[in-house]
Image (tube, rainbow, N blue to C red; front, side, top):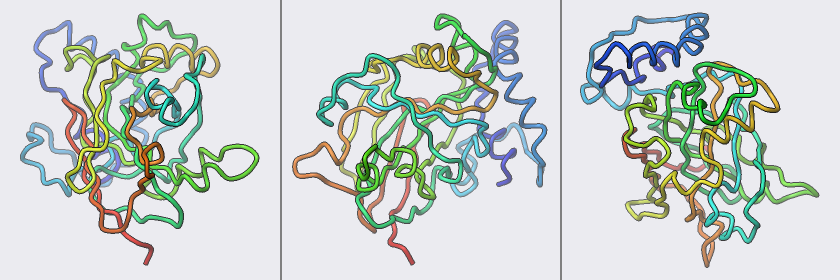
Length: 276
C-alpha cells in the first residue's frame, strides 16, 4: 500500500458523532494532513471500508515518513529497576532512524548480536508547536499506535558511551501499527494496556498509567527544547519484561513469532528470520 494510502486508511474516524468532536479532530489533524498531501500518492484511497474487512497484508506503517523521531528511555520505573538503573529525573531521549520503521505484519531479519523486544505506545504529532503546555498537549496529538523498539543489546552497550540509536535502527526495528487512533477514542488515553508475547508466551504487560513521564509531559518537555512538527513520532518507553532484564537473559531467535498489542489499537505479528 502506498505511504499516504496506508497512513490515511488507518486513521480511525469511528465514533466522531458530534460537531464539536469533529471540529476538535480537524484541529488536531490539520498539521498532519497538511504534511501528507505533499507526499506523492500512487494509488487511490477507498474510504468507508471497515478495518475488519481489510486483509492484514494491506496494512502498512500508518506513519511511514515522520519528520522527526523521538524515543524515550527508562520511562517506566519497573523497567529502570530491571535494568539496574535509577529512575530518571528528566527525559532520557534518543532517536531511531527512519529506515528502521516498518509495518505491523511481516518478517524481521535478526542481525548478529542479541536482539531484545520493547513494546511501546507511539504518539504521532498532528499540530506542532514550541513550548506546548502539558495540560493542552493531547490536542497536539493526531493519534496513537503501538510500536516495538527492537534493540540489539550488544552494540547498545559497546563503546565508552551507549549506542542507543544505532543499536535500535536496524531495518525493521521500528514496526508500528496496525491503526492510528485518535486520543478521544479511549476512555483514558493516559491509561492503556499494552504488551507482547513470543511464540504465545506473554513476556510484557503494562499500562501507560505507569509512565514516569506521561505523554503530555513528554510533549511539554520536548517542545520546550525543540519545536515539534506535524508527523513527528514519539516512542514513549517500555514497561518491564524485556529480555535483557531476565535471569537468565533471553533474546529473539530465528523462527520466533513476536506478537505486540495495545488495547484499542490492535496487534502486530512479526516472524524473526536469520540473515539470508
